[in-house]
Length: 640
Image 1 (cartoon, one colour):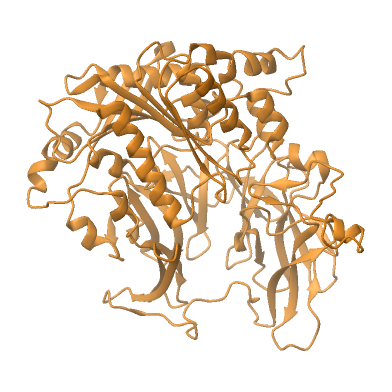
Image 2 (tube, rainbow, N blue to C red):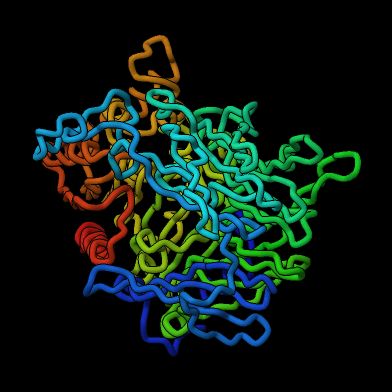
C-alpha cells in the first residue's frame, strides 16, 4: 500500500496526543448534540455582509432553536440579524420588483375516503389508482405543489403558472427554491418539473426545465431533448441560463454535467471532464462558473469558463486541494468565494476562498469553543490494493491519544448511496469523530461506486452490488487489520442504507472476519424491496430490471446471488438492526425480515425501531438515543 500526504497525515495521526495533551475531553454523543449547525442565508448586494443561521438542538423540547447573524466581511464583526432587516435580496421577487413567486399546494385529486364519500367522515381510508402513492416519508394526498406569481403591489390575483397541471414544483420530496428562478428581465420564470404520472413517475428520472412567459402566458420545455435529470436552473446577470443535467433516464447517479445556453445553443461545459458536478454558481461577471465535486475522498472547489469565441469548451480547473469538503456555495464576491467547509473533526463553518490560490480564511466560529476543548482524531489517507489490479482510496480514523503500541477494536464503515461520496463530511449520526473518541479505529473505503475517482469507478457498482465493491471493503479491512495496533478479534462492520445492505450481505460472506454488525435501514430482501420501495427507477437501474424477468441475466444475478436473504443461512455473528417506521425508500419490512431471521437462528441480535423517523434520524432525542444504543451494542459485542 502507499500513503498519500504521508508526512502531514502521519504527523496528524501519531502526534494528536502531543498536540492536545492539555485537553481533557473527547467528543461524546452528548457534546455532538450541542454543536451549532451553521448554514448560509446569503450575501448582501454590496458583498459587504454575510448573513447566516445557526440551528442548535434543544434536548428538553426535542426541537431546534435558530438564530440569524450578519457578519461584516471587512471587520469580522458579528451582530444579530432581525427578520425586519433586508440585507439579503429575496430571490422570489422579480429583478424589476414587480412580481413575487409563492408556492402552495393545490388539491387536484380525491384520495381520502371523505374526499370520495363525504358521508363517511370518520374513515381514514386512502384510494390509489397508480404507484405514485407515497414518497420518502409521506403519502400522496391528492395535492400538488405549484408556483404562483402575484403582484408585489397586491393589485391582481395570484397566477398559477402550472395551469392546474397534476405535477409538482418544487419537486418532492426535497425540492426548494433551487427548483425555480427568474430571468434577469423579470419577464419569465424557469422551473423544474417531472411531468409524468403513475408508473412512469416512479420509473423515470426525466425532469425538465420549463419557461413560463409572463407576457404571453405560455410555457416552453427548454430541455425536451434530454431524458434524464435537468435541475438547478440559474441565470447569469447577463441573461445566460445554466443548469445541471444527467443524460440517462432512470439513472439517478449518472454523470452530472453543467450546461449553458449561449446564442441559442446548448453547450455541455463538463462533457470531457472525468467527474460529476455537485453544485454550482456563476462568477461575479457571468463569464465562468464555480462548482463543487467529489475528488479523491474529499469535495473540492472547481471552476470552468464559458467557451471561447469558437465555442470550444474551456478546461475544468481545480481551485482547492486539501483534507476537507467544500460545501454550500454562497456567492462569488470578486477575489473570494463564500462557501462552507467541513472535515471529519469539524462541523460546517463558513469560509472565504481565494479563487486564484485556493487559500481559505474562516469567517464563522460557532463551534470553535467546543473543538478547542477536546482532543481531535487522527485521520490518515491510504491507497490499498484491491481486485483487478486496482487500488481503493481509504480513510483511516484513529482515536485521540492514539498509541500504536496498543491494540484497538476496529470498525469497517460501509457507505450508503450506493453512489454517495465518502468524503470529509461531518455527520451528526455517522460521526467518525465520536466513534474514534470512544476508542475505535474506523476504516472507511472509497469502494467502487463512489464519485471522485472517475466516471467509470462511480458507475461500476450498478448491477454488481455484491461484487467488486465487496472486494474493496474486504481488501481495506484486511490491509488495516494487518497493522499491529488492530485487534483482529474485535472487528465490526457498520453502515446505513446501501451500507446497511452491505452489513447484511457481509454478515453471510465475511468468513469469520467480524465479531459484530450494525445495519441501519439496510436492504435485506431485494425482491420484497422491489415490491415496496417508492422510486422504482432506482431499483430498475441498480438491479438491472424486475425479479420476474427470467431472461434478464443481470436482474436474476442481483435478486439471487446479491440478495442478503439468500446468504442468511451463513449468518453466525451478533447483529443490531435499526429502522425508521416512515422510511418508504427502504421500507420497514426489510428490518422486520432480517430481525426475524436472526432471532429464529439463535443469533444475538437487537432491533432499534423509530416509528416517527424516515430514512434518517432527525429528532434530537432520537439522535442521542441512536448514539447511545449504537455504542452500547459495540461495547457489548466488541469491548466486553
